[in-house]
Length: 148
Ligand SMILES: [Zn+2]
Image (cartoon, rainbow, N blue to C red):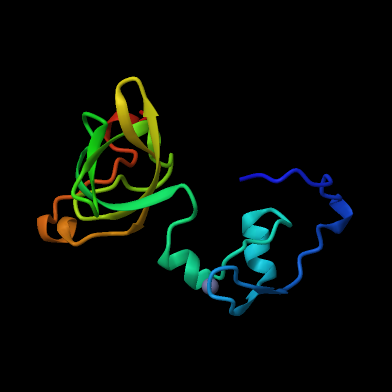
């Protein structure tokens, strides 16, 4: 989603609050300096935060994790349509706890000769499944990382 424009002038990278109009709901909203810094770009988003929360960005979909096996390194996401989509560990962010059943995730769909799979999988909201099971183990530095 990159539009070719003039290369950003580093001198122009002065973060300040900007008043923008959402392309989706036409509401005026403030693009805060903080958000700009986090995003690291002077390219303003086209939609307000509410619209970005309510709807996935173009090219992305949402679904609920059916299961994910950290040992095997893959799992499945159930889509609203009822279809199930494979995803691999390599499509998860490097940081953070792995998804567990019931998590709401956002992802893009990539298609290759072996079929479709979810990529760039991001957990939007943790589901309740792991609270019920109570046996979730984040893959933090455990026995394998012990330095002695
Ligand atoms: Zn909006």
